[in-house]
Length: 177
Image (cartoon, rainbow, N blue to C red):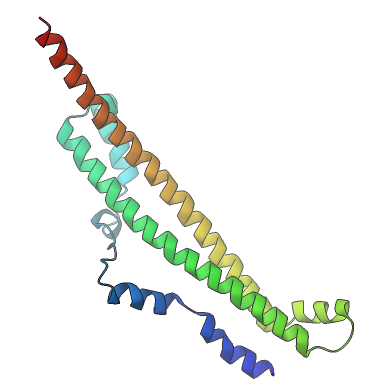
């Protein structure tokens, strides 16, 4: 094994395209970018304006509340997809980095400390260490955003459920007469 063989072997660890092809072959729909995102609409600002307009989420009419639940849900589905792709990328980058380190370590001469030091200064290893850090950072940010979107969806959903329960309680009180 030599450095050229190591570099050629990197392609075998890149699985995103293969994974996407399998998903498409299974005819599973991939969430598209929501219109809000594509058009540069800041759904956070719109949501805050709407809450202010009605004096809080509890006073919003059902149609607008339902519309925003749908918009947040679309954003959440897309964010989950982006997070999954970022997770695949970070796992792949970690495997590539670790494999390169092991393979370069074997090629070096000398004791363990010297081999480790030389391996950690190899440009190929440094490149993949950087790619791994970038990919795990992207994954963590995508995950945090997705979790934030879930909180919004859950809050809106709870409000809709609460209102439904209030209406049932009101009807029960009227029926008791």
